[in-house]
Image (cartoon, rainbow, N blue to C red; front, side, top):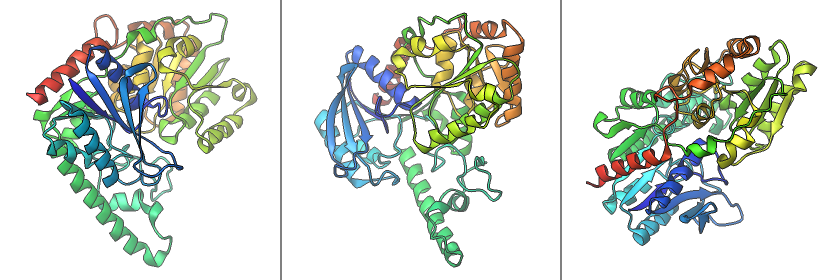
Length: 431
């Protein structure tokens, strides 16, 4: 088949979960003999908007990358210049199917370009971006100045006041007009997205929690909504060799951003009794990373000096470069994540996971079975669960041995089988 994969970033330029997953399936599809093209973005301020650069996956040159430049209009949800670049690609490649992973920082209306050409569309849901303009159901502004306020559902006026107030003029006399304008903007955006949904043939959710939430809260038709967990190259999780002479080490893998809850993990680590270490992996994000360093510096000396800031790693080397240096992984997100890759990866490497008992995090980590759960956003309870691994020798290894909760042998879904499942999805919409 000729397949066009659409994703808002591609490793190593962008290296979060949806991007890593997209690269994994693109490489595996190419290995199966499919012709794979990736339509993705970059942000080069020295080049014009819409400039297109063709490249290749450095690890799999058969995967062709089409990088459209979007440094100045990335906050728009639809963009004509990106639609035109995408339509040119469709005319050139004439794909059998388009597989979308994310449209943020690209353009929602590129869906129309595929439909004009009668190309079927599969869409993998990675977050709530279709039904929440900011994607995570977290409010940027709240009445009580809660920096991490959770949102209980999308409403146009609430979105305007709680998330888009950053674009208000700042004048109290103009606030009512600003609310009306942004309420209308959100309303138009949501109506447009619902129309886009009508043009997509099949939605894939990597967590049952996410599937059910889209069906219940966004009226996603059940007949074009399926559950299919991510697939993984299991070989990447082989070769973990843990050093026995180190103190118990907790690990964090991910982006240095507030929604990931690293600040709560650092504060929870500061509450622990006894000797322990915390290693934090992830790309430096400027001020956010500097702020996290400052939070860590305020801990008692014995804990502040026990935090190590690790360099970014390649996902292909995660066992050797990450899991060999940790005894437990903590996923402390303050937003309700759906199916974090790191949870699966740790389970394959037999490393226990501590995470909240909500969403896809609680769906894949079962308390006292293959990890430990804590009350979401509760730093004290997080520290309590971390302390258990220090106080109960052997518990971490016992939990880690269980692995993935939905297979008899504890192994996570294999990429080869996952590709067969994706091929079946493509055949379904092509049929």
